[in-house]
Length: 383
Ligand SMILES: Cc1cc2nc3c(=O)[nH]c(=O)nc-3n(C[C@H](O)[C@H](O)[C@H](O)COP(=O)(O)OP(=O)(O)OC[C@H]3O[C@@H](n4cnc5c(N)ncnc54)[C@H](O)[C@@H]3O)c2cc1C
Image 1 (tube, rainbow, N blue to C red):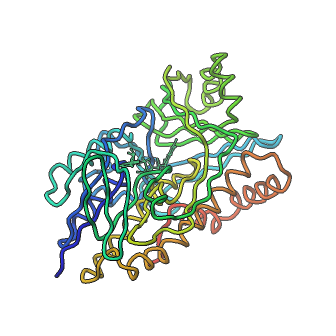
Image 2: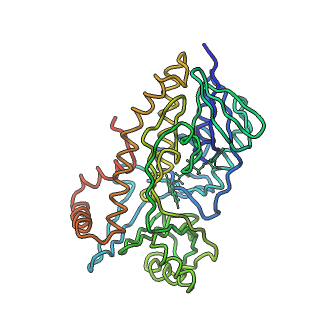
Image 3: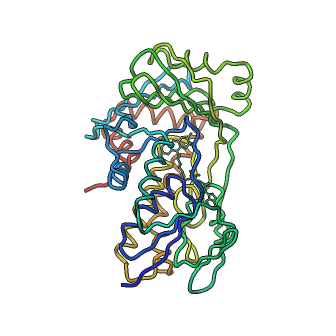
C-alpha cells in the first residue's frame, strides 16, 4: 500500500478534529498547519447527539464529563406577532437522551491539542501558510522560510480561507445587518437542561445550558441596536426582563464578545488536490446548532472516502470529485434552510410572517411534523 502526505491548513476545532480522524488511516502522514486557536471565553458549541461520537472516539469525551452540559429540551417563545406562541421540544420525542451537548470551545480545543501531541503521525507546524503552489502531481505549501510537498491539502482555515483562494474556488458572502453578541449569565433557578429561544421582531435571544445555574447567551440584533444597548448599559436589563420568567433573576457577565452575522458558501467543496471542510466551505448565523456539526459531517465523509480507497492517491480527481458530490447536497440544504429561518425571524416581511405562522401552528398540532423537523435538524439517518 502506498503512503500519502496530507496537509490540514488551520488548527481550529475542525482542523484539529480532521487531523486526528485522518491519523487513524494507516497509510497517511498528516501535517497540521496553524497557530493554537484563541477562542472567546464565552464561546460554546452545542454538539448534536449525532456528531458527539467523533469526540467520544478521538478524545474520549463523555456525556457526563464536568465540562459538558446536556441540552434535553428547547423552548421557543415566539413574540413576533401580538399573541405570544410557545413551543416546547423534548429529546425523548425522538428517543434521544439529549439533543446536544454544550461545551466551551476553549475546553474542547485543549483536549484536541493534548491528543494531537500524543499522536505520532501528526506533525504540527505552528505557523501560518503564506502560499499554495500547484503542479500536476502534487501541491506545495509555502510558509515563511520553507516549502513542503503534499498529495492533498485540506482547507480548514475558516471563513477567510486562503486555501479556498489559492485553489480558485469561488464563493458567495452575504453580510447581514445584524451582529452576534455572546456572553454568559448566572440565574437564580436551574435551567434543567433547557435552551430558551426568544424570537422578537428583528432579534433572537438564545440561552444554552452550562452548569446548573449558568447559561451561555447568543444574542442576534441589528448592529446599531446592539451598539446603543452597550453604550446605555441596557443589556443586563434586556436579558433579565426577557429570561427571568423562565430562569429567575438573571445576572449578565460584564464581559462579552461581538461578531458579524454572515453567510459564506463556496461554489465547490473541492478542486485541484484541495478539499474544503468546516467554515472555509460554509458559514451560517448560529441557529439550530448547524455550523460545527456540518463540518463534522464533512470530516466523517472525507475519512470514509479515504478509508475505502486506500490505494488511490487522496488528491486525485476521483477522490476530490466524489467528496464534492457526496457533501454538496447536505451543505446546500443547510444553507437554504438556515437562511430561510434567519430571514423569517429578522425580516419584517409579510411573506416570511405567513410562512412562520403556518409553520409554528402546524408544529404545535402535528406529532409527525415535529418528528420530521427534529430528525432533519439532528440529521438522524434512517436505518
Ligand atoms: C456565536 C456562535 C455560536 C455557535 N454555536 C454553534 C453551535 O452551538 N453548534 C454548532 O454546530 N456550531 C456553532 N457555531 C459554529 C461553529 O462555531 C463553527 O462552525 C466552528 O467553530 C468553525 O470551526 P472551523 O475550525 O471551521 O473555523 P475556525 O474556528 O475559524 O478555525 C480556523 C482556523 O484556521 C486558522 N487559519 C486561518 N488562516 C490560516 C493560515 N493561512 N494558515 C494556518 N492557519 C490558518 C485560524 O487561525 C483558525 O484557528 C457557532 C458560531 C458562532 C459564531
